[in-house]
Image (cartoon, rainbow, N blue to C red; front, top):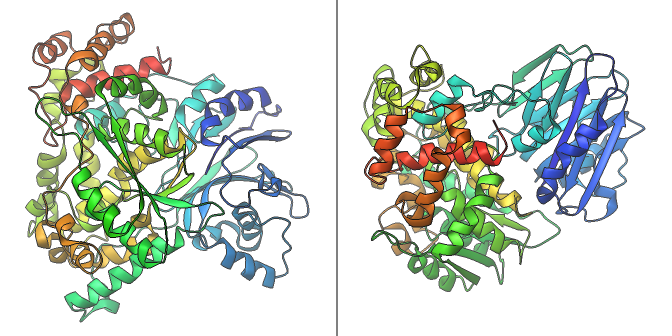
Length: 594
């Protein structure tokens, strides 16, 4: 896990190495173990290293292979790098390190852009071909590792975070009205390639982009699982599906043990992280480090689920760490959490993960986490209403359950100059549902959430907060083989048992029932969902600031209405609408966006 950045010029000028160094500075927390730069004429790369595989200097980046004429920067982990290394050695390639970065370099030389089909893991990679001058960028299948882009006719810049691009300077920071519409309607999800800023885009997941020396480029998507019933699974019984999912999950967890340092678990006490812990115990992991976090109750809402995480910790005799956070500590952490966000994210989980990551990083460098199971295996409450609904009618059912507000309500929130002339968010969902490869409305919703919502909410949240403390988080539920299998599972099996039916039945075979047979929980952070005291004061200050008045995004009467009753207007997902507005302003102001 690392941070990468760079610049590619198209106007005949040499790359601005000083700009690359400025971009690298905000990435230091993602890679506290090393710093490196490389420049050749019109191209310059920067890198910050977190040493997980090949802890020696041989694994440092940017990595240059003079013999092959290739240079690369890489963020992530290739779990099958040892197997690929052996295969490439069979083709005559020689290695000077034991790193997965070198495997990517030589794999690219062997297979070209098809190397992505050989890689199992999470990755964002940028390569430069010395002889052609071509630059190639690619991102893993599920978008676990980020890549942000700032492009003009003269140059392309890239970085692991949006704030790093801002540090480089010369970025159009105008608010993008379409992205703003998505943010306010789709629970802060802004689908790639958009970001809330016009001058910054993100490379979509499962995408390869090839940039020629003259600035022309082409890109293609190399992976997209079909959510249809497949012939190879015809005749599968429920037990067959359980067996297949359990074996695929075991493989996913086992793959993510690849490291030259210990691997722990973020244990919330829910089904997903508990199942990971149980499977790691089956793999023979002794003295496994597990970590749970809890908060003070606010407004009558409990702030921890230690009762459930304790069950798992005791069952598997893990080296368990309970992390309890006071209200004052939570308020103090808000600034860092907002600063760690590459894009504004309203989920209260962001602050929880930031605080958890801070504590965990003091004792370990790699953890497995349960993100992705709800999207992949159908665990959310908006899925059951889609059962039996025709695909074309599923869009409205999905939007009613998930969207924070519709287009008409958007007009009550935004000043007229920021309004789009049509409902761009609903159109996006409708187009996604209409794509081939989804057999039912539920299949379409699972595909949408796996490809878009998951990437730009839970996965981004985990990457941003863990990497802000130099902690690598691995997500076995997003193993692409497991995701492909889950996409083929019959919808009724996903909806069984109140949601995540097949995964729960797998869970019964591994972990205690009391962890599974309980109401669905979330990372509870009461002080964010129930605004009062210092947190409410921060929100008020942000929305009444001079910067907010100059920006003029929101109708003053709507802001006043929310401030008069800060906890009365909630979204269908029980999010606080005032927090949604306040968080956006806090993020813009903290990152210096005028």
